Length: 277
Image 1 (cartoon, one colour):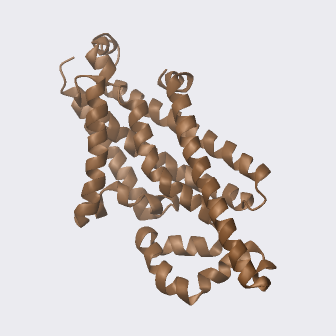
Image 2 (cartoon, rainbow, N blue to C red; image 1 turned 90 degrees about the horizontal axis):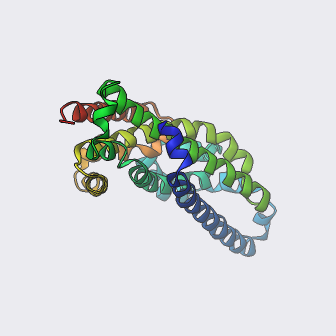
Image 3 (cartoon, rainbow, N blue to C red; image 1 turned 135 degrees about the vertical axis):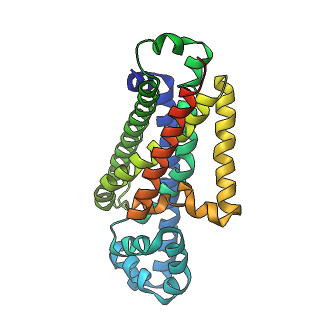
């Protein structure tokens, strides 16, 4: 019921348009900017224009400037696995750029699509009738898993449609590399979304009204983002610092996100169990 309610409603349209628009905009800007850069490099050195784009990128990754300047920064935000994945082409750069923006946009979309899943039923007292038939734990888990499955399905649909579109319209787009990388990205995306759905449902269960859940959920996301920047210790623990590693299925990042998902969902269940409905 939760999955169908999400997919058949305006929330699905919201996710497809907002997230799809973001991915389309970021991807188009990347292709445009890199195209201009390649044109200028080719003008300065015509021999480079004859090289395969993958070969040119591989040579750039081996350059002294990359090793000294960009390499340490990439290793800091994504670990050695990120540097190696960019070097061997298993993580296309355009996909990495899109995922960087997705890490910011998707938690907000999870909040918008799920802030009222518990709070609406609690506020209207509809939950009182539902909980006569099922346990509170089952009710909360159904809400969590329904939103998670619905949003994950929409994200995958957006990825498939836009990669297919780019494959048909842009000869510079590395379609084969992106298609190869996407299945692993979707596995990471599943854990990413599950953890943030659990985070949102804590506020949905705590709030007395749906708008209150939306407001406090937004402040919670913003607060954790600021704490991650201000307090280094929190930045190492909070899942938001591990998302880049998650797209590459780093074992530590997987453990961090699964631990967050388990704890946050358990807290959402605990909130509802202690509530007078």
